[in-house]
Image (cartoon, rainbow, N blue to C red; front, side, top):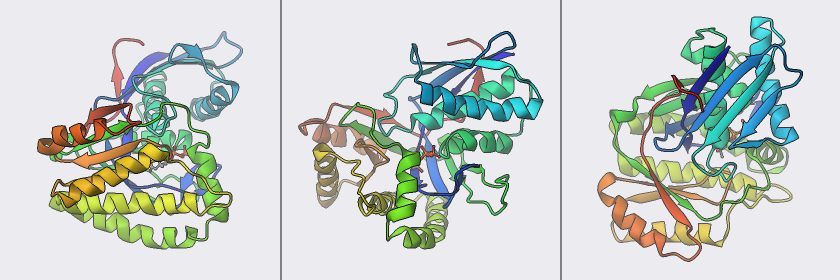
Amino acid sequence: MKATAIAHPNIALIKYWGKRDITLNLPAVGSISMTLSGLYTKASVKFRPEASSDLLILNGEPASKSQTQRVSLFFDLFRDAVGISDRVEIVSVNNFPTAAGLASSASAFAAMTVAADAALKLKMPPSRLSEMARHGSGSAARSIFGGFVQMHLGQREDGTDSVAEPIAPADYWDIRLLIVITDEKKKEIGSTAGMEHSRETSPYYASWLATSPGDILEMRQIIADKDFEKLGELAEHSCLKMHSLTLTSRPPILYWNGTTFEVMNAVVAMRKQGIPAWFTIDAGPQVKILCRPEDMERIEEELIVIPGVKHIIRTQPGNGAAVLQDTV
Ligand code: DP6
């Protein structure tokens, strides 16, 4: 009744923003991502028949009440699937800042899903693991798989086809993602609240939904062709389209800081000098730069000197979630 798993966060090349069903956590749009090596969550899950409540230890500290509640609801899915009521103890460790727009919920829920499946000896197929992870966090459905991954919008009301599917493995395409950290504080408005607010108030929400299928098709073709320039251009466009929703929500949500802008400008300036680099940003102030391996050091040198840049993390396509033999 105990297991440990590792999962990596992912970067959305085509963003997910908005839900069509909040209870089942069904996305309103499909998305495409790249799972990232180097960054990880390791989660140990232990079912304890004798315990009276669930316990979540996050990076060595007991988690807040709301975090524990979210995880309790998630584990109810497993308890219901097996027909048990055992409480669970989860020890989760990230090797990167939590809740700073680095998709820690993606790697955390993917790791917890795989660990729970192993602890309960369920042997769920990957698409079912992805569906379970989606209930925890939409982006977690993608982190079950490595490399390049598509999250399907799905058609069914019960959400069983709203799952991720691998497009190509991690070693398919050697591209790099630099994560430029501009602030390590916890973000004020999480993705769940932010996307609901955009759905309710942004006048651009309808066009976001309408243009999504075209973006998905185009990105699939770009990945098939390994066309790096087009990948960068479309990923940057999808990011700016998503942020147009947050900026035009009422009241607006501003995930960026001044340094975020400086880094975006620097990337555009580098492109003018002929260096192929594109940015993408999630629900936080960090800027992620897509680039080729041979340009990485040069880009890093240009960006690290920008005032407000704290540090830069190098990543590349990484593997899917997996069970570990050791414990956290
Ligand atoms: C901006 O997966 O964190 O990173 O399903 O409500 O947990 P919930 O949202 P979450 O949203 C991720 C939003 C994003 C874009 C993306 O990863 O596709």
